[in-house]
Amino acid sequence: GENVEQHPSTLSVQEGDSAVIKCTYSDSASNYFPWYKQELGKRPQLIIDIRSNVGEKKDQRIAVTLNKTAKHFSLHITETQPEDSAVYFCAAQDYKLSFGAGTTVTVRA
Amino acid sequence: DADVTQTPRNRITKTGKRIMLECSQTKGHDRMYWYRQDPGLGLRLIYYSFDVKDINKGEISDGYSVSRQAQAKFSLSLESAIPNQTALYFCAAANSLSPGELFFGEGSRLTVL
Image (cartoon, rainbow over the protein chains, first blue to last red):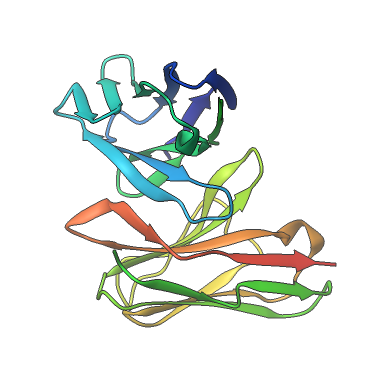
């Protein structure tokens, strides 16, 4: 089955700086890569996704990139704000969704 | 958003007891999932169902069972709870047209003493 690895496990950034989270996947059949954000005490929610026929996607301050050859994808958050503090999960889907272990992002004021 | 509701939200029980966590959704999504969240381990899939007659094991199904009583309802049972099943459990629903977009419930925190 699919195996998704996510790094780093924790990330502390100064407000206004950028944050980058990287994930790798094992199954070349995976074709959909969503990112979920989980605020403290809340449920995970989808924030952005990318399909295997696209190399990059951007939505305001967040962007995702995908390298199918290397089987890795990344989340980029620019101009970080306190409300970006959360746990972020990457995921990869073949016939079901497999999640990475999560990255706890802390934005320092 | 799909309205996904889990009950109970919090439960404390003792080793050996039978526990059921219930999940219902109101948007008619055909796919439903049960995940377990533990610190540092992310979201691990316990069971999933693509329709009422379909039940599939996930990566950590041992010690758990599920029932898909209707398209809107998917319950998770622990036949004989043990302390290492203490965790936060999430139910999720998705539409087969957009299967990677999961709508999660609020979570059920289970403590097994």
